[in-house]
Image 1 (cartoon, rainbow, N blue to C red):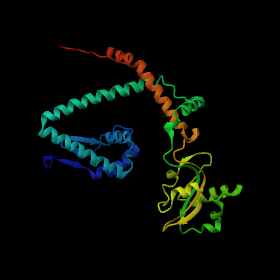
Image 2 (cartoon, rainbow, N blue to C red):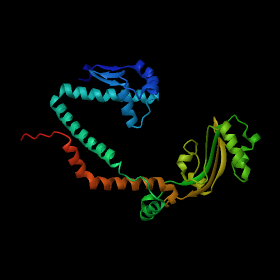
Image 3 (cartoon, rainbow, N blue to C red):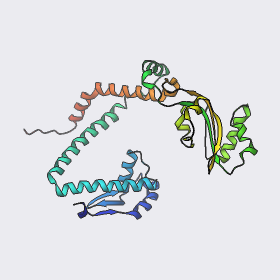
Image 4 (cartoon, helix red, strand yellow):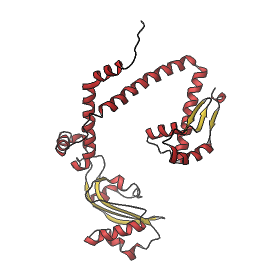
Length: 287
């Protein structure tokens, strides 16, 4: 049963490991941070896995959660191996099959990316955009907006922040930028780039407001809660269910174009790649 398994979760190793991850992750660090029975997790292996998963091993909470999850997964494996060896054998065989699929995927990527053209010209992006507009219909507003968040205790009126954020005069933005550098907890303004409204307001308590009214009325407002004062200026917007402008989608379209090229290369070169790799290895079939 699970209770018969020995799990070692090295808390001290985790804390010390934060420093080691910062300085030594590029080295072959064999410091053990956790173990389940005789299976050990080293700092270097944890770093590799976490980085692949998009986790930050320098973050103590993410590191602690990852190691806890690793111990749980290893416990399941150990229990199955101990109590149901025939199912464990099947699990090992399926894992080996999956590993071969991963190997093929990585070999294809490494080989074909050398030949892959990653440049997408504006004409290509425009052509793709015009041919696939229905795929890009918005599910949220995109806006051009200004957003400023400052501590509530600041006397912003003495600095004319409540006037400058309206951007009525040429000098307003310069003065607001200077103020934001000194005092802002968060600040965003780029009048040449579209951004999702929810991305701009993720740090603003707008839940009590009617979002449609804020956007459609190009609202200019400021308000405070117990800790902060927020300034919001909606300069322009695109409606939900509309197709956004091509410049908003250019990076996504470029990624799609390059992904399509990679798929075409795979289809053209798959058999050649398989044959070339097979020639490098001894293959014996005994039936």
